[in-house]
Length: 299
Image (cartoon, rainbow, N blue to C red; front, side, top):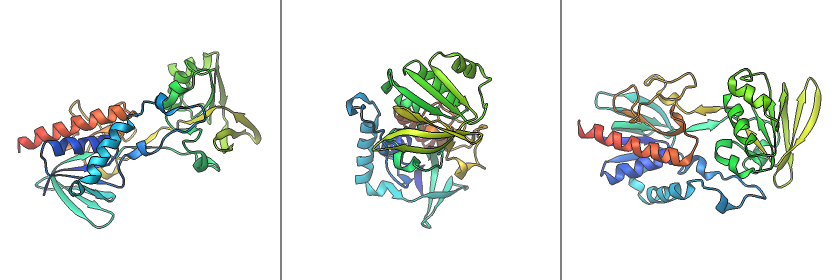
């Protein structure tokens, strides 16, 4: 029986594990890899590494520590969580079963993909998935944002303050009738292509163009970068019947990272906290570990 099991080895999960170790807890991290989305870095010909503050250096230090401490982690995929009399039981893809008194879910969220030709080839090489992370790099450049939800509109609005020109490829009217949508529509440097769908990504070493179409008519758009903003998919299904989630399936937590189930905590992009930033997830992971530690002291 472990004191604490942590699911997910991204920034939040790694930080929580390191903090738990330093509190001398008997902790186990269950994850398929170490680092999560920080293992993927945006590459563009005009982006110099020193210009990007990613938090990846912090996460890398934590990952190295966990890599060395083999007793504290299992490289496997958690597939089922059950509530037990003593706490929780986690079953994994490889057939492992692990029990603990407390649990932290830090399984993150995945960006939705376009699933079109060229996407895999140019992913993070001109094809970006987080304007909130990379927008400051595009001063006086031309960019394309793909999507029609609040996430896409927020990204277009942020980029409009920085970029020379922003083209919003909106497959449907989506959230364009919201206050944010109206602000995007009236921005002088934003062009909205409503009803267009992206069919292909083209380029050389980097993505340079996308092929879009509407009612059978196709056209190519050139830009310095293309932002795919199709909302995030929180990886929360593993505890779907155990905790309260919002309408976007994010785990709802309080200010101490507690969920609606006693002893079960959550951190990072899988929660309803505004994150999508490595350093925010690092802080949330630390909070979750400290809250779990306080909970365990009372058992």
